[in-house]
Length: 129
Image (tube, rainbow, N blue to C red; front, side):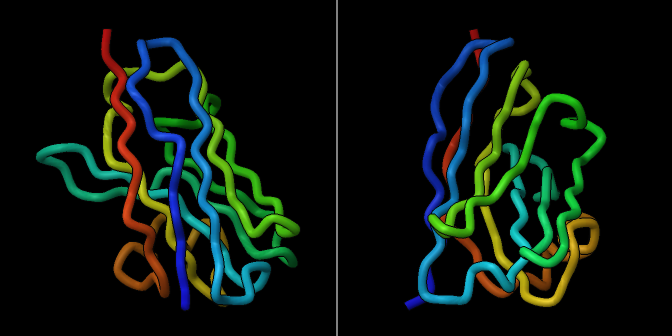
C-alpha cells in the first residue's frame, strides 16, 4: 500500500522555524523525486521545494522561499524533510508532499502539480502572532 504521510505542521510565530517530514512507504522511494507543495486559503496550489531522486542531487526552490527553506532526503528512512526558517505569515498553508518517478526537481516543482504519482494528505502550517 502506497503512503506518503506528512507531519510537523504547527502554529508558530513569525520568524520562527519548523521542520516538516514526509514519510514514504509502499514504493521504491529512492527512484522518486519528491516535492513539497502548499495551498493557502483562496490561492492555487504551488510548488515550494523539490528534490531529485538518489541519482539526481538537484534541488529547486520557489523564489518566495529561497534562502529560507531547505529540502533534504534520508533514503535509509524513506523520509524527506523541509526545514523552514524565518517563517512569514504568507507561508501559512496546507503543505503536501508528493512523489514522481523519472523526473527532476525543477520539473516537479514547476510542471508536476498535475502529474505526480502519489500525494500525501497534508499538514497545516500557520504562521501568526
